[in-house]
Each structure stands twice: as structure tokens, then as C-alpha cells.
Image (cartoon, rainbow, N blue to C red; front, side, top):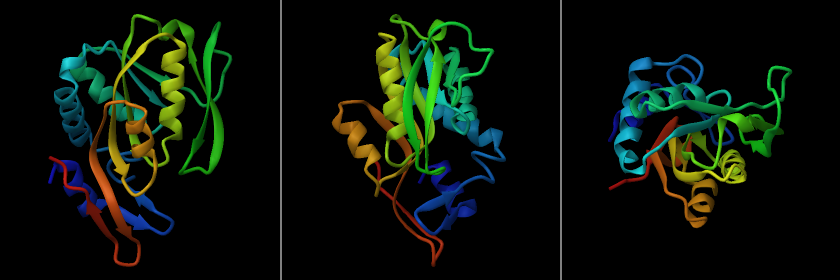
Length: 194
């Protein structure tokens, strides 16, 4: 069992409707030492990919992406959920649906931060239905860049996202894959990973 799985068992909270709260250490209040360990693990897993950019979506993936980027010594680019006046020029746009927020957003990335020479590692905190990842993949491909891999902190293995992304042929590495959660018992069962 890895450090993230242990932390989920210790401090994660299972809620009804397949919600796993990890906000005390991962995506609201953040344990920086844990984030550094996560970054190092993704660096180890994707060290052979010659990554030039880390890509994520605001907001919960940013801290993890920064830890990963520090290990690769490359910039982080994050998709914004709304176009603001400080985004100049042309943008790549994709529509994504959030499992957590139950809404659709258009996400944007300035074309000046992603180009055909980039070798992209997509990083996010959760994978449920895969909609956010599909949006980031679409933007990356629109830029002519290559998706070298996808790193997810926590994958809900009982939902379809991981299967969809893997069936599309992308290299997907999840640090913790939750196969089952029980809100009444507060229990989590992880998939064995080799």
C-alpha cells in the first residue's frame, strides 16, 4: 500500500453518492510533503517520456501538477474554467462536465502556452467519468502537442473514466484506484496494482 492509499484510509471521508472527501490533505487543505511524494512518484513513472509541459485543470489539480512540474523542471499550464480579460489572444476551448460540481464548463488555455513541440503530461487529482481528461486531451491535440501520459492521484475504478481513457490508448497511471466505497461503514477498498 502506498502513502496516498494509507492517507486516504486514515483521513479520507466516504460520503453518499460515491463521494470521497480528501479535502483535509489533498485538495482544500494540502499536505505539501504528501504532494512532494506524489510528484516524485509521477516523475518516476513518466521519467522516460521527455515531458515539456504539465497540464491540469483548475483548481484542485494545480497543487499536484506543481509538485510534478518541480520534479520534471518544466512549466505547469492549467485550463481555466472561464475566459477572463487577462487572457490575451486566441485560446483552445473544450467543454467539460464536472462529476463533483454536476455542471458543464468551457475550459480555456491560451494558445501561446501550448504548441506542437510540447510533450504533455496531464495531471489531475481525481478521475471519475473522464470528462475533464477528455477535454484536456482534446485541447492538447488541437495544439498539435502530444499526450505522453496521464497521471491521476485517485481513480474511482468503479466508474467508467479509467476504462474510457485506457481504451483510447493513452498511458494512464493512477496512484490509488478505489474499487469500492461504503458510506455507511466509511470503508474504501483499493485495487491491487503491480
